[in-house]
Length: 297
Image 1 (cartoon, one colour):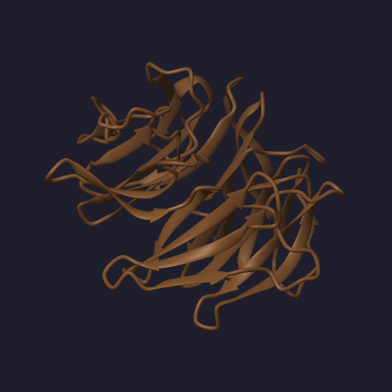
Image 2: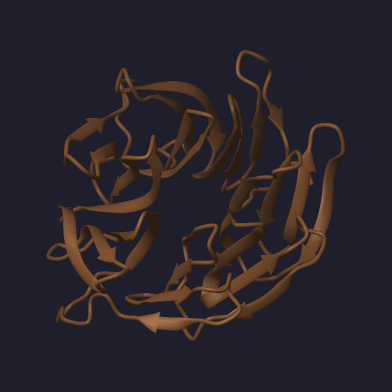
């Protein structure tokens, strides 16, 4: 398993991390026990997360997987789409939401049954969905680059209405989390130019902050954001040298602190307090800050 990239990662509630390795499946990694293969899978998984007591994964061609026993066994199905599903979110009451190209799939029973919702049905040229995040009765929807309707939208789950929160003509919203109960922390990326940033939006006051890397070469894109116990990490896309960076976000100082580098895109990151695991395009790293990092492929 050394020197292999991964496409998704999530911190296990027991110990270690769930890691999706492209064309191989789902693994569990821990420092003490190393790698253990949990589920053979040829489809690429792009996101892994807990919703309630379940572990969900989603990926290419509408693939969705679920485990009810901490990864010991999995079920697999798919949504009626050829699109890659980059994000899945939900809450402890059974609500789960994933996305297709322009639609969302919602469940009220932890994924046993689903219905299709089309929040952009009134738009002649709807944006392609890239990220999802739930807060209260609002589902926040981040889009890929769309010059007219790109940005961050909010879908009211009670009223079944949608409105734009922040317009983005030239950037995608690759990943979002809710921090401290009121802040959307968003990893933003551009197609050309060094316009990548972490955007922070208050969902109540609409206050906005833009946080960029202060290293010499600005980032083109940020790809993922993870938070645990108040510690936030973000990852970038690879630069012209084929390396990307992992930053710790100092939320209150509005500062990105460069912690480590990884070969290829930093596709996903997951952390347990200060310790983090980054799933990179060509390699993975498990890092305990201020200690020697470990290549964990």
